[in-house]
Image 1 (tube, rainbow, N blue to C red):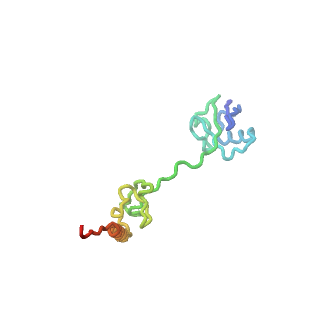
Image 2 (image 1 turned 135 degrees about the vertical axis):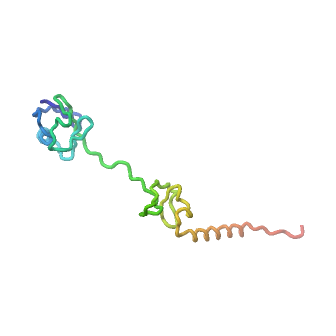
Image 3 (image 1 turned 180 degrees about the horizontal axis):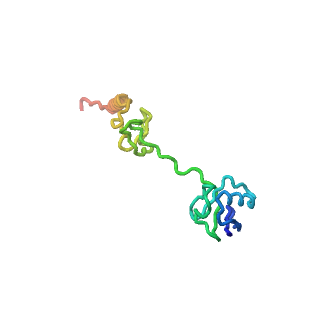
Length: 153
């Protein structure tokens, strides 16, 4: 039977193979016909990857006059979303996505979701230090803004 192989460059190569040929047979035939390396290429037919070399082409619904495409594998994908650090490695661990920038704790270095981003919510070790720092900041601000009553007016 005759099938067509579409290369990455867009060229279509006609190939004649046996009707009971396997994916491995097709790969060998393409390697002998094609000048480039096919070791990292993928064979795709009907949106399905022809992965198993021992399977016959008929299992992938390859019929006479079918077109099989050569494609390069895509690497990567979407980056993994970081998870909330609340009670990490415990049964009641939070699995929500972290809040960018506002979910970062400056005292314990954890990254938290919107539910656990406050110091009280994630039982931060730096909670007491934070309260002291905040109290000192407020006291200093009140002292600088203190007004003195002018006597004799």
